[in-house]
Image 1 (tube, rainbow, N blue to C red):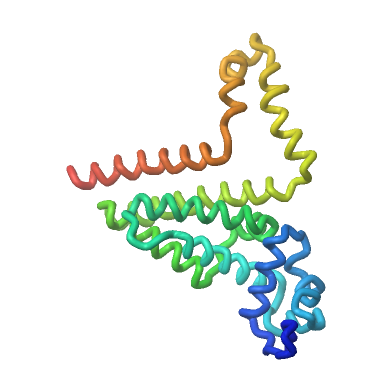
Image 2 (tube, rainbow, N blue to C red; image 1 turned 90 degrees about the horizontal axis):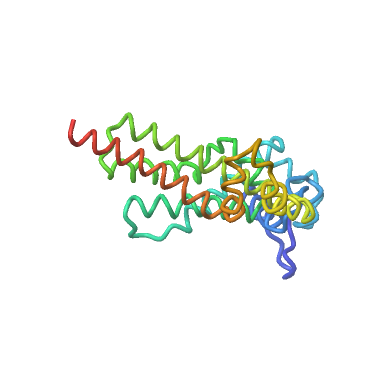
Length: 225
């Protein structure tokens, strides 16, 4: 049983545990999926958590799936297929970055839960609406999903770096790249100023732009072929 501070105990369930883990993850704690951290958050003995999850991996997948549900719920209703998928991609990156330790850990995984199913369903439906044939719908869904998850995991990993390391990485674009030997690295020297201006939003936008270029070419070929 859990006392939520109102003098009213509630039953410990997988749902309650996942909600607590998401709260901890939002604080950027590296130990958010441990029995100790969850026990402290819920006011229970740490062993109680593992009566509902077989191991840490099953808990990670459940919490990761909740992050995917959160991303799905950020996509407004009524959008066209392209805008729907663009908003979904941005939401996944944002949610994973907001819960960085879980986001980085779950990005390469398959959660196998309703959150993941909802995202895959949304993407497959949108790609079908764009006129792709069945083979390309699946192919491009996987391509975008894995690209976005990879980028989301990278951004989440970056978010957990110490401030000093993040600052050093930012300075590197201005100092080391700007000071590159133009004889040995002529292309870097020519583009150094522009490289320093590229931010994470532009990277994601460019990824999506390249994706639509490929999809449009395939859907056009399917229409004319």
